[in-house]
Image 1: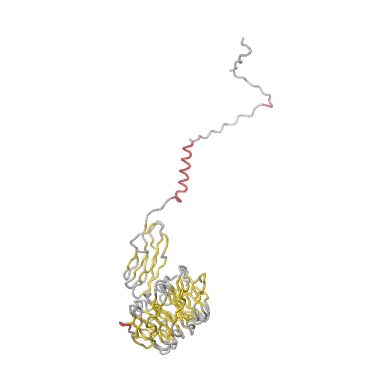
Image 2: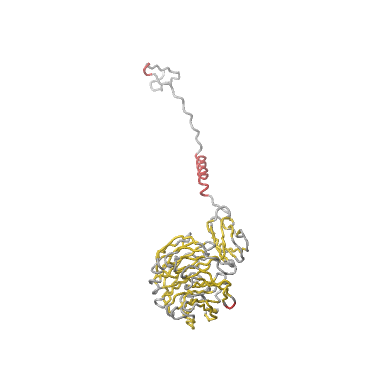
Length: 466
């Protein structure tokens, strides 16, 4: 018999438990199968793999490079050179497509531009910039056309437009509407757009330009009082308007569609009654002539396109300056003096400051009103309203003008323009509603074309060709 302190033996026999009927247990539920658990390391690896798969498109770094190309329409002459950064490409007459040889890396930007225009034509670029994706670019569009001449007609509020024929004559002009008393006109560098100042309504109208001279109005913006001359930055990004009824220059940025928007600083001061403005070929400086003050105001051009006067803000001119031009190489500036029948000439320094040349003025005809310089910088011409003539000048390597001849124009010339290739010259004649047209020969000599004049609208005030 076990002692009292010994443990009681465990009964290993099955024991049947009896329950009262009311306390009987519910039927046993079917057991849920247990999930198999992965080891911790394997589960973590699976999660990382899933995350990488989910984010793979975001984390992937694209590699490679592709070409830039596109199509060309209307190229009928030689000389066109296009560029994408430092990569240039010369295109022959009749070319219908192009591809640059240098590829662009994925993610890098590209921009196609016209480096040199073809002979006798103006070309523009569409779909011309972007960021390189993972396929070649083939939808850049280059459109070329013959030159177009535009004439603003103050007397009937129109703009006459005409294409330039191969022999330099203007085709039959088409009429386009303008604001009240249009007075000044300028093209964009690629000839795709034009801007007209309306002296009577205090506005600038923006247009797109068709190959036959038809204009489509893109918009209108207000200016200061009696806007007159208009100039475009060489980049085509900015437009400046001389407000002849006041003392300001209005300044605008050019939108992608060619319409204008005033800069945050909408106007800058000039002298009294500014009538014209010009920008240097490098876009770094600008000059307005102030007919009420007998001065030129000198400006630097900021990165945003806004003008700021130089330390020496003005320099003297002759009496009643009404037009201004910058030499194509940026070495000189010329001011046309209506009342003193002369042209003031200045050396353009590296800082943009002007210095009167030793021969500060050169003679012109009676009441000169407009000036044009040949694109190669070797000759210049001035339209003289008072005696219906054109004074021709040779231009030295230093930019000095020397009278080289006098030619007849129509009645009361108001404007003058040279074709971009330097072959043709056109003068708007306010007194007889015509444009005189000339061939430019050696030595700057002018020869009237067989069709010496073409009729435009009433009281033409200015002419431009692009």
